Image (tube, rainbow, N blue to C red; front, side):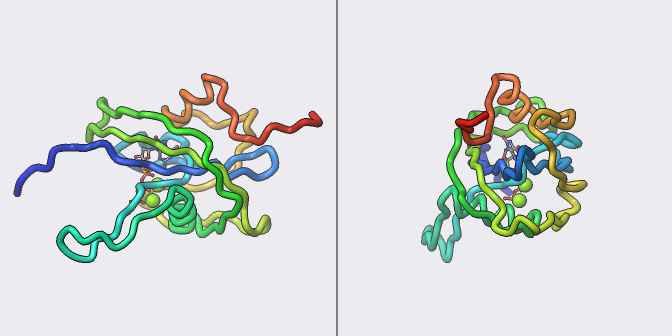
Length: 157
Ligand code: 8DG
Ligand code: MG
Ligand code: MG
């Protein structure tokens, strides 16, 4: 079989915010194994037949779909935050991701995350922004180090 040349892919990940906390899960993956990362995955397109594109996704649709697939959580107020360029050259499978970071809120604040893809994630939990677990998946670690904060600016604090 022909070996396909690697191309950059688009990752869409979500800062799901609840009070002062954010949802993170410990990854099980060839990229960033055993590090704490945001829920999310690949931007997808659906192809019906050879070169016939049926439908693509918006970033917001992708974020909501990945959250549902990975945690069973419904989300709302999905907003674009930022984008980063991430080269994973040291990983077992070298790859390149342009990663879209969104923020969202729980549609139902009572709903709890489920581990729907146990082969990809050891478990989900809420972590306060001031007390994040270690090690973080490095694209996230880098943002935290640079002072990025996913929470909306609060005028009365
Ligand atoms: P899929 O089959 O469900 O589409 O893919 P997935 O297995 O859920 O993909 P993923 O690895 O969770 O996410 C896609 C890529 O996004 C990941 O390989 C690298 C990039 N990415 C970052 N930061 C983060 C992050 O914090 N969480 C996740 N999940 N992916 C991230 O650059
Ligand atoms: Mg996924
Ligand atoms: Mg994922």
